[in-house]
Image (cartoon, rainbow, N blue to C red; front, side, top):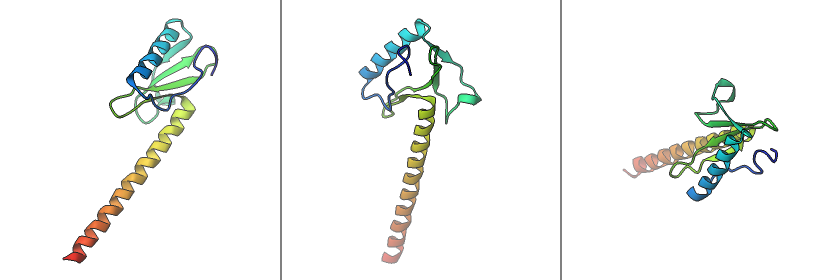
Length: 114
């Protein structure tokens, strides 16, 4: 990251106002050609569609996930976004199996109770 792009990454936007401030900053950087919007292709695709940006100075690629209701979104380097998705996928997988175990235990208790 350099002075022409961004000084920090966001693992989530705490509020709509915070995202709006970030979005205005991103818009001004794209209008001044410091940041370029990239087309999504197989090379830089993550789990699903996200917006990709390239800093024309340091050539760092950033990924933006826009917040939506409970999803807080993020703005991360491509490497960190990929690791973040892996972490979320792993967490979701653990939750899914945890729920399955609880259902099996509850069903077993019901069967033995009858």
